Amino acid sequence: MSLPHFYLEDQVLADEADGVFPLRLSPGDAKHARVLRLAPGEHVAVVDAVRDYFECEVVDFSDAMPLVRIAQRLDDEGGRPTVVLVQGLAKGDKMDAVVRHATELGVAGFVPLACERSIVKLDAKKAAARAERWRAVAKSAAMQSGQRAVPEVAEPTTVEGACGLLANATALLVCWEEAPRTAHIDEAIAQGLMRAGAAPEDARIAVVVGPEGGLAEREVEALLGCNPRSSLVTLGPSILRTETAGVVAPTLVLYELARMARCGAEAGERLHGTGEMRGVR
Image 1 (cartoon, rainbow, N blue to C red):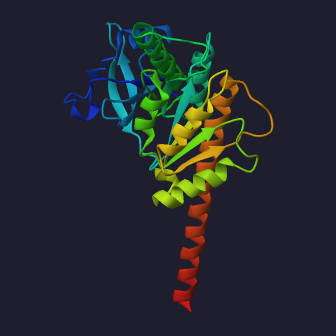
Image 2 (cartoon, rainbow, N blue to C red):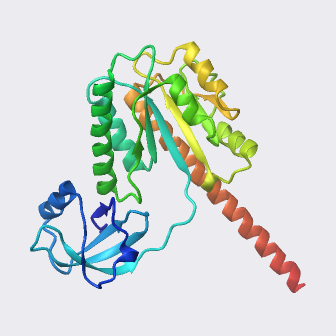
Image 3 (cartoon, rainbow, N blue to C red):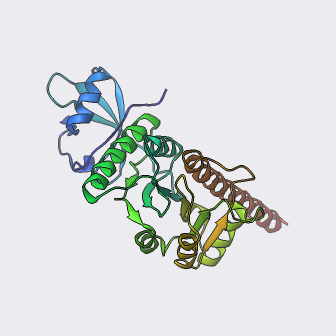
């Protein structure tokens, strides 16, 4: 059974001098902990302000914050790829759904994209409010799914603004319904990794999905021109809704990166084994 996860904003557990100390949760997280009815002896997973990962035992929860002791410091899982979803603004609660489900799958960041064909139009005040809401959705989804970090959610931006954020990505994949059917995601990732000289586990891949009306050709050209490792990619013969594509596309990228990393590790093990056999001979 997975442990409840909590994320600390300003507390570094390695700096705690006492064996038992209060866990400085945000008001919302403290309320959530009470809803869970955490009792003495129960364990929780905690990611602190420097992203160190701990398992803590609840000692007491009679005050506003739980008192805990560190049960163990959990090992870092090693290098993991970063996948950022650049999602065209969608109407209604579709953005909430995309952020929630993509977070559960392991997406590390979101860039909401205001496009020419976006139905949703946000002024600065509304954009800031929506971004705060999406951050709350991402945090809730990260807690529920046990992610090692809460995804970052940027303020909504234009294609020009996004281009500045994406210039250094290992690969930039632009999902477009008019992309050639041979423009496969795995080949685009492999090409980006090769050009960047990066391993799959160290990659930072950005995936662009348009809004309900799709990306305009001008926007596609701008995105392809902002990074030398940009590629058009297809999600198959079907035309997907934006909220479907926003989950499917990063899932495929995460799957391909994991597959490539696994194949690389297996090849290294075979090579190592061959070297040992030669040494014995």
